[in-house]
Length: 217
Ligand code: HEC
Ligand code: HEC
Image (cartoon, rainbow, N blue to C red):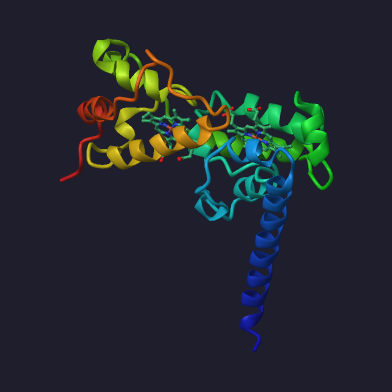
């Protein structure tokens, strides 16, 4: 049964990773700050969804980045944004960030990456980052017709490049973003304020459709 050895090792590795994940999820879910941590990022993006899943960058992301909250999709932020985000997160893992006390209470078992790992993490996240909208190519985003899109879609990350998807593909992404908004906003438990801009899904989809990638015939 020589040939089954690699499979056994692979399964063991999966089990170990799943175990680590379980531990991490338990840690933040059971923390007194769990409800706050839970809302930092939406659920649904799993380590198996990471691009280049076998690369060192993906493995380090899965190892370090689910210790306190749900996993971040590398495509959430553009390349320019990631270094500062990772720097802030590494400080938190070292117990030095703001919210020091909150983090300190969770620190038992939280592992901080050495500088070399942090560099690999940044490079990986940047390689798989969001491509921002180029205002020279889509100046309409900054005109009245782009208002609904611009106001809604730059709250958590840069404005995404509309040519990332086709007109048919965008509505599903926008619907997921609507869920992300609900999930991430519930942290503050805010009620819609009178006069607060409302989400105009139809306008957003129409704008994206106009500037979307053309489907290949
Ligand atoms: C020690 C706990 C901890 C670890 C580990 C951690 N984070 Fe965070 N993360 C936080 C906290 C607390 C917040 C909310 C406050 C903030 O944004 O700094 C947050 C927020 C975020 C956000 C949303 C805010 C934004 O700027 O978009 C992203 C994205 C993020 N983390 C990515 C990561 C990545 C990538 C890693 C792995 C390199 C990571 N986190 C590891 C504690 C952690
Ligand atoms: C409440 C915060 C928030 C808002 C507002 C938001 N997003 Fe996102 N966005 C995220 C998060 C979190 C991710 C990573 C997880 C995911 O992909 O769902 C993401 C990832 C993305 C991605 C990359 C992932 C992919 O599937 O290609 C695109 C594109 C995107 N958002 C487009 C939009 C658009 C368009 C809007 C406006 C309708 C928008 N976002 C508004 C939080 C937000």
